[in-house]
Image 1 (cartoon, helix red, strand yellow):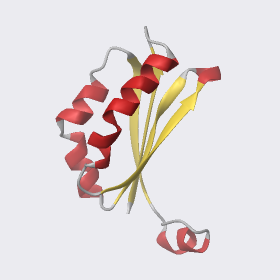
Image 2: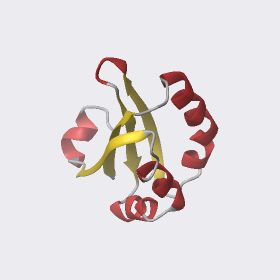
Image 3: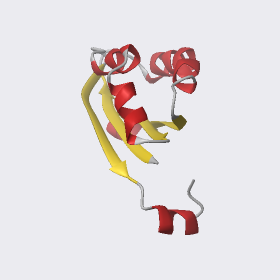
Image 4: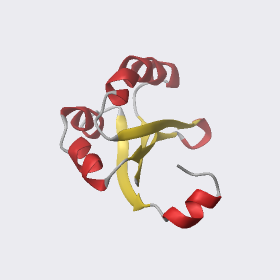
Length: 100
C-alpha cells in the first residue's frame, strides 16, 4: 500500500463552494483504479484542505498523477499552494494498530 497526502489553500471560493465541488467529484475519485480510500480534509483555521489517499500500489498513485482528474486539482486556480507527498506504509506496525 501507499499513502498520498495532498494539501492546498482555498483561494477565491468559500468552504461551502469547495464542499459542493467535492460532492460532485466524489464518485470520480471512488472510480479510480487502485484507490482503496480517500479521506477529505478541512482545516478552516489555517485554510488548509485536501485529501489523504490510500492506494493499493505506488503505481496506482502514479497513474492518478498522470490523469486528467489530478490535473484538475493541480491546475485549479481556487487551490493555492498545492502540494502532493507520498509515503510508503510500514506494514508490520500498521497492521498492529488496525491499519489496512
